[in-house]
Length: 327
Ligand code: GLU
Ligand code: ZN
Image (cartoon, rainbow, N blue to C red; front, side, top):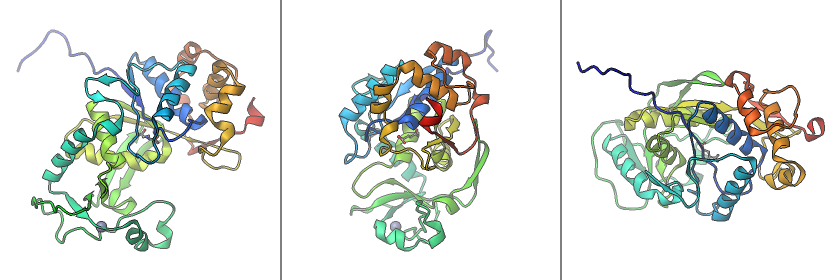
């Protein structure tokens, strides 16, 4: 066995913020950005800004530029990525990365675990039991060939179809940095999922895994609404032979009506937040929501970096936020 005098240096912590440029960011989005940035900066790592503009109808370049401007206003600097930049892996905008996703789709097809799906959304909805329709769609395997998975490579039909990936009927487990041990059975939770839509659009699950793996991302920080997606993504990491990242899902910020913030909560949009607060006030508020400080006292990013620790982050599903109580 070959020995060396020094240990290889451990891989540098690499985090990322991966917004979809479909509107102005709100408090929930910047909460995620700030926590991801703090974790990486505290570890002396690298932070990537990736633009998830896979949906051509809803994504706009001006929203992506606005996201950059809002991050810069807060002082959140990125080391790689952004709207116009190229890096070791090409563009950091998903709309420009289709050829890369196509290569990995081929790799997945070679496993023999994919199949063409001809269902419309209406077909899929009509197979849902009423209790399963809490917003989430569970694919029942309508187009799955008999005897699947056979491991046998069949020729792809040339007509218009989506490509689905077979999921095993087994638990996929991981340890979330905030929520602790997690276990999901993909057959029960989502069924065989789409890798590429019939119109050629790439599915989020495939794009995000390929990008995170090729960009060397070691730590994924995002909202707890994506916990199940982490299980789907870990399955893809396994099939593609990539090293999985550490996942840290964050509680979702909700308004006083207990609803998760959305682009409709205008008072929580960066437009309003920037009009009414300084960056330090907003960072102080985020620090308080993250349980890092007892009160929402204004803070600089340096002060916040010193205070940051994962052990403080609340582990409940949501954080109710009411401006009146806080500012
Ligand atoms: N683009 C996704 C969003 O804005 C985030 C995906 C992720 O962080 O994995 O919701
Ligand atoms: Zn189908």
